[in-house]
Image (cartoon, rainbow, N blue to C red; front, top):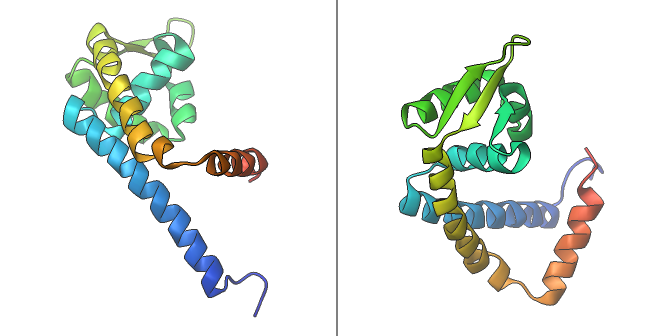
Length: 147
């Protein structure tokens, strides 16, 4: 077998890993959405505005932090503006746009954070042994800067 091809066991491991992540992540997002009405994208944007920008970021910085293209982010921000979660303001100094979390958005984020934390604990952290945590930490550190 060619070294570039995966054998059945390697494929099984990959799909188990990927499936576990998607399953856990999906449960966390589902609980958050059911309790807050926020989507995964809404939460990601609000969270980054708060944590990375202390309430505001240039739209380009926000797009890069989310690994979204400008068009996708722009469409999503338009929907969020209609719900009064964020506002956009052109920058005077250049062609950039500042995205600002509103009081409605900050309140929604503050309501969502404990729900997200509880869901992460329930669906992920409470399932781990000390050895699991050590292994996941080592794997994350080893693979963090590769790619």
